[in-house]
Image 1 (cartoon, helix red, strand yellow):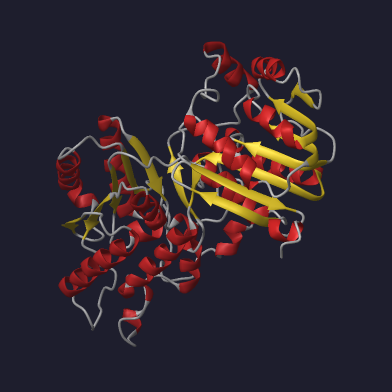
Image 2 (spheres, rainbow, N blue to C red):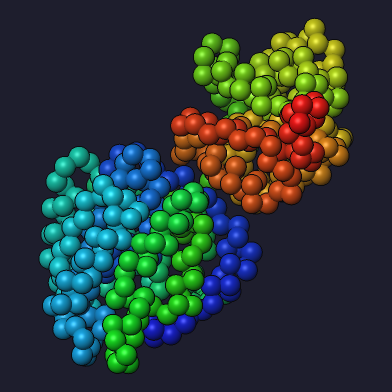
Length: 453
């Protein structure tokens, strides 16, 4: 049984963020298509726990439905300012305002069950949610308060939603709220093996911050009377001021993809990603080459060369080019493609184990970073930085859409690099399908390098 005073500061946010396990949590490839339903036990749970996810889904063009199970009327017992009915009305208005900030098109349903008494009306909650989830297209993703959160209402909602998700055969995610208050990182009840992070864009972080502030009855006093004190301590609120959302997943973390995965892929297809016949790939190569700040490089490292289509074009601007891939089948095809280019050497290498030795004026990491888990990515990025020659250039390019089979998303790869590198961002290209960033140890622009500025 967990007991805690919700108005107390709780465990400092810094205690969580400083823990290596917290920093190395695996990423979740959030489903951003189809029908998502977010269920909250109380008004404000949806904002504190997954406000950033609501913003991300809204920006993806698939706003989630939001369901609030209780009426929120018990947050200030004995208040001389608001009776329970008036408080319930205020909290409903706050939910509407908060959700409108993060996801304006999200429909909101308030079931109105008694705050603090959800166990007693469990069957009614099940019936209400069952009817709502079965009304309309199939639910693809159900997100609810975590069953282990230490609050009875949260547990009831999580248990009901877990059973419904199993019946509906949809993805089920849970979000902790009070865990961050009563637990410490070493508490055995922290589900480290199932915690996952969803990376948030900067604009999602800002919108969530504004949405939290919209829950005025919870973050500000109703009056000077002690019973009207905020239910959420400012120190506890800092726990939710971060650039990721953290959820409890039912699926195991996806490990770094091994060479066998890629060999099997190449065994089935000569050109599995359509490098040679897709306009998308041809255009992306043109964007890659155009983004490079120098017309020629002495030593180039291409990580993940595939069958060597980009390799052959990079070779035209390189004195020496080392192209590596984890797949022996891909390397064999790449060698045939560049057989007449003596400046190119192609070899089998897995950068997850070790980055090839040498000093490189240009490193190209294209469509590779999301194949490894987060700790491995951090190590690879650090190793690539160490291999970059003084004044060198690092180019990264990735598919923008999440892929369920990959440990990371392209977004996470690019955000991780941006937050950890000491290199200067020279160029960035964003579009619906791809991300392309160029970093340099030489901060000068192209015009400056060529004497135009």
